[in-house]
Length: 443
Image (cartoon, rainbow, N blue to C red; front, side, top):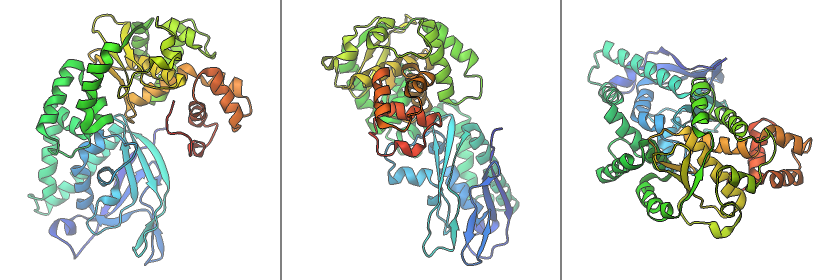
């Protein structure tokens, strides 16, 4: 059963603060299912309670002020202060102590990441250490309902000119105006607050969207931030002329099967990717759980196998990517930027996965380090295609925690040891702590 995210609250009487804060003083709980993310220890009263006593107006202002970035901006590899201020509830301020709760979205799912913190000299201490995934639409709906309730309270108290009301009207107008919503989404993907990005950068990205597809440029924005234009120009100028053509058999059939049979279901990206990888293996007459050699992989897509095996095939571009010609449904051109042969195999598989996942109007298929749902699908597809779980378990047996066994399995399947470990972690065979200290390169 799906766990619902919700706010529950009761209004309180308050004598201190400005009009808005006094009016909206409340005991507020944030819940996922039956778990209160706001469970705390009141150090002065020496009690434990499930809800925090705060200004609901302050909370609503923080949610509204960061709405576009919370909705669209993915978690970066290295979160800076600006990202934390927009995604961690502890930054809400207003003189209150807030939980150390991070909201990390990928476009379709919101990761709620709550850590226990020791608040020295503070009156409360939050007790929960929780990690939960919820659909982004549930997050939107709950935030909308909470903010609307706070606004109703303000209006009932005669505070019709409160800053929250004005801000929320603007955001609602933007959300329901397609051109404005697309503009705000791109700003957020770049890592900017509303109207903080230069018009010239937005115009350049809009121009690139017309040439290469909106979805493709949004992926570049999420991965590269303000450097998206420079990286895109480098890929087109230096990468595209060197790109090698490949043909992906049964591409249209696999894409149709994914759209009709998988995307309509409430599945995680990795679950969809796993099903698509299984269908691809079937369409390409591959055994469901056997390794794919470099020669076989190259033969499937009609490419020169030296592009997967030789370091002479390396191209120094910002990332691996694919280029569609806009005509043949099965044909694209690829550029691979990685040094290791396992990384190039993984990059090729990611681009093939993106060809299945992305919209037909996207003529550019980037394989980036961003944590968007599209990139998650790519990685999960490549993992399932190159290193199927059942085949991996048959190979590794009971030695899942043995480094030598992991190295041997990686060599057999032509992938990195980290990918093997990641597969075992994602399937629940190993604890997530097993990934700590490993090379950050997924492939």
